[in-house]
Amino acid sequence: MHRMQPDGSAVVSAQPRILASEVPVALVFNGISHAVMMATPQNMEELALGFALSEGILDHADDCHGIDVQTVRDSAAALPDGMHGMEVQLEISSRSFARLKDRRRSIAGRTGCGVCGVESFAALDLSFAPLPHYPWAAQIGLPEVLRAMHRLTDKQLLNVQSGGLHAAGWCEVDGTLLDVFEDVGRHNALDKLMGCLARSGRLQDPGFVILSSRGSHELVRKCAKLGIAAMATVSAPTSMGVRMAELTGMRLWGSCRAAQGILHSAGRGIESASAG
Image 1 (cartoon, rainbow, N blue to C red):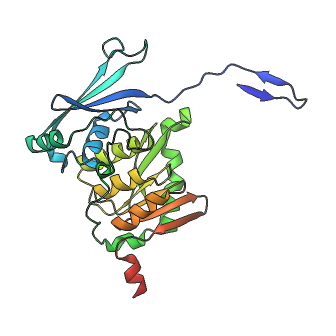
Image 2: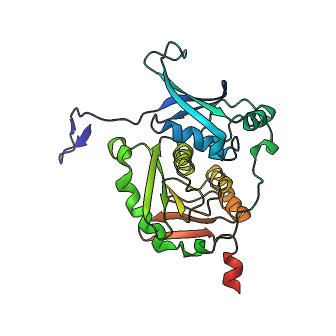
Image 3: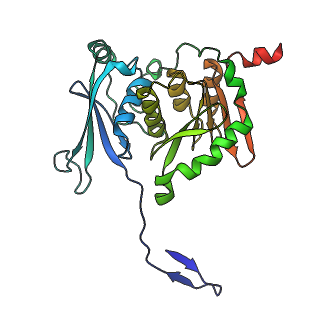
C-alpha cells in the first residue's frame, strides 16, 4: 500500500489483501457442456439454475431434476498451474434437453456484453411476450428503491473484503431487502438471485430486483424472461436496456444513488393508468 506524507514523500507498507475469486465454470446439461463462464465460486447451484431459466433452456425449475457441483483440478482442465475450474452438471427433462440440442450453439463464455458467441441478430433472443400488468408495480417509487439501495452495501459481505464484486438483490414492494448474491459478473449475480427465487418458488411474488451495476440489455432481458416486473440499478442504464424495458413493460429505475434516481420506464399499464 502506498500513501503520501505531508512533505510529499511516499510511504510503502505491506498489508494483507483479499481479492475477489474468479474461476472458469462449465455448465453441463445431461452430459453435454453448453457454456463456460468466469464466475465467483459461491452459490453454483443457484447460478446454474438461474442461467438455465433466464436463457430459456428450462421453462420451470421443475425441469431440473438434479444439480451436482465438482471442482476440476488445473491439470485435468488443461488450465494454468494453480487455476482450478468448476463443473456444474445439471440433469434436465428430456423435453428441455431436446430443445437445447435443436438450438444449441457454441458459447465460448458470457462476458460483460452478454452476447459473445451469438452468430446472428436473430439469435439475440430479444423478442418475447410482454410482462403482465401488476398493479403493485406502481408502488415501487423512489423512496422504496433508495431504501433497498441503502441496505445493499451493508449486505455485500464479499465486496466489503475485496472491493471487486457486483451484487443483485431481491426486495419486497416496500423496499425491504431480502436476498443478496454477489459475483464478479453482474449477470452472474443476477442469475444466482434468479436461481434462488426459482428454487424457493418466489419468482411470481410482488417485488423488484436491485443491481450494483448499469441497466444493460441482458439484465433487463433476463428479468423480463422470468416475469420480474421492476428493476433498479446503481448506475445509468443503456439506451437498449431502456428500450427493452419499454417494450416488455418493465418498471426501470437507474442512477439510484444517495437521494436521487431516474425512472426510465414506468412499467406496463402504469402510463395509461396515470393518463386516465
